[in-house]
Every structure is written in structure tokens, then in C-alpha cells.
Image (cartoon, rainbow, N blue to C red; front, side, top):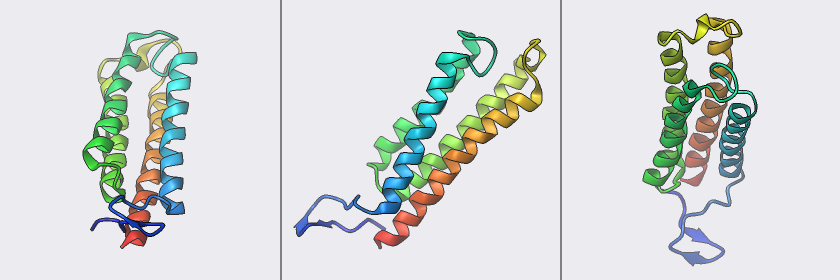
Length: 137
């Protein structure tokens, strides 16, 4: 289902004035910003500048690519955020397979909990986008 196409009496552009949609976008962008900030400041998988952190480019690619494919429509964005959360956890699994937990300052718990936290935020955004899609019908 597509969102309402009437904005202030003009037809043709999707209505993104929905407060739930704005909250979903805000949560998704805040999550991505905090993820980039932590990676840049101290690194997530290892020390600052560890090449393993480059795996997070997959997470950002899924989010950006999915948003473009979905044309920022709420239902498509909900799917995109779900895929982004899955990509986040796949990065954690790849880090464990590569043995990042054997570094002296990393553990399995730290890798899974930190990545799980970000995945949960992306899932929260997906839920809000889904709610926005239902409200737009």
C-alpha cells in the first residue's frame, strides 16, 4: 500500500508529515550517526583503525541502498531497516568467525552485545516505519 499522496492540497508527492515516520527516520539516522561516531572514535571490532571495522560499510550500504530502492516509502523502509539489523548481526558473526574475540581487549559478549544494541535500534526504526505505513493507509 502506498502512503497518502496529498500534501497540503497538492497531489503527487508522498506524505511524510506523519509524526511516526519522522520518528522512524530520526531513530535510523541517530543509530547510524552513533555507529559511525563510535567506529571513528575508538573502533568497535578491535582498536581504533582496525580494518575489521570496514565490515560495517555493508551495514551502511544496505541501509542507503534499501532506502533508495524503497524510494523512502514507509513499508519499504521498514523492510530496509529489518535488512540493516540483519546485516549488523552478520557483521558480528563475521567478526567472531575471523577471531576478533581473541584480541586482548575484545570478548564474545562485547561483540554480540554492542552489535545487538545497534540491531535493536534498527529494529525499533523498522517497527516505527511499519506503524507509519499502517497510518498512511
